Figure 1 (cartoon, helix red, strand yellow):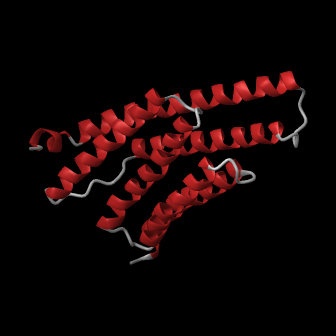
Figure 2: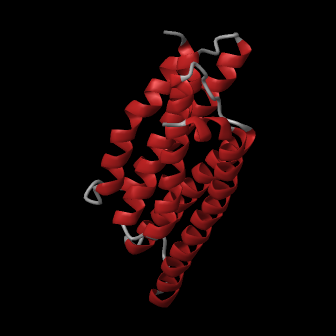
Length: 199
């Protein structure tokens, strides 16, 4: 197995640690730890693709596993955010629906001997998701520091910041939904031959 594919597998293996830190508030600075793990996983997404292109190590496994690893990482984050009441379920359902739909089309195409790589709209969607997730994690960590008194704010200001952090997170998530819908529609159109022939 080449290095890019190992990085893709590493991204998947980091997901349980990310979820563990995110959902255990008893761990000190759990948002910071979750953000660091998520950031490391997101970096593997950048490096596996660039290394594969640079060294001519693009494989069918990489074409399929790389976007799948992205979906596992992003889906885990958004589902956890729903449980933590940081984002709304409707937005996450739309995002997950698109991901399952695209994965299904990829499986149909694979059965017909074709591997569909991610296009630029899919990559833009992934970037918007990563930015939104990191933004939410950073804002929640600052809010945690405020609640612990590490960042001094008056009670009223702390409440305003907490509310603003939630609103900004919601806006960032709906921007992801917009990219999700656009990229999903383009993906369906570009691969409509597999939708028509699916049985």
